[in-house]
Structure formats: structure tokens, C-alpha cells
Image (tube, rainbow, N blue to C red; front, side, top):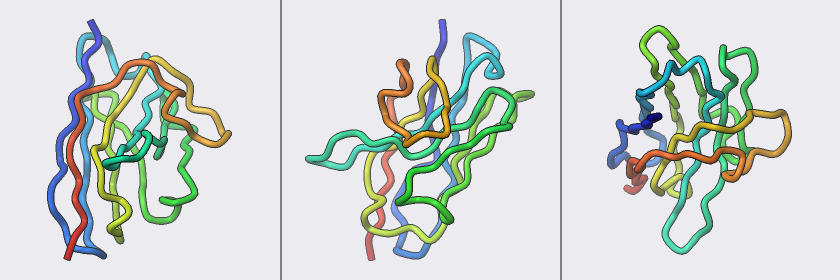
Length: 125
């Protein structure tokens, strides 16, 4: 059974960086496109980034382009989200997801059907 476990969240000041990790188990990660989404209190979940099975295609929400980088290591069944120059608006719970498709269109949280439990990111002075 597919499991996704996020880690790496925390409290960081504006302008700081965090690297989120998504551990994929139950199946080889190379079977899946993987996406990241986030949800801030009172807001709907929004798509943040995604990467295709072998990493040849990536996509980002406009709000994070140039600041976030998604990558994957299929040998170790891991997917990463490097987040730089963080802003208070980046605060939220970040989830990694599978069982979907990473297209070149506007990324949506509904692009993926199976999600982990999330990791909290708080950007605050």
C-alpha cells in the first residue's frame, strides 16, 4: 500500500530556507508523478509544485516560481522541495501527493489523489 510521509517543516524567518522531504513507501517512487500542495488556515488547499516520474518535467505555482525547486531521488524513493526566500504567505501545512499527473498546466491540489499527513511550515519574524 502506498504511503507518503512528509518531513522537514519548521519555523523560519522571512528570507530563510527549508527543505521538505517526502518519503515514498509501499511502491517504488518511480511509478508516480509526485506533487506538493499546501494549506493555510482558513484557505483552500493549493497546488505548489509537481515532478514527473523520472524528473523530466516539473511545474510550479506562479507564487513560488524562482524560489522553490522540486527534485527526486528514485533510488531512495524520496522527493524534495527546496524552499528559498520564504515569505509569511508561504505559511501552511505542506503535503506531498501521488496517483496523479504532473502536467504543464496550472497546478492544482486535485491533480493528485493520495496525500500524506503533512508537515507544518511557519514563516514569521
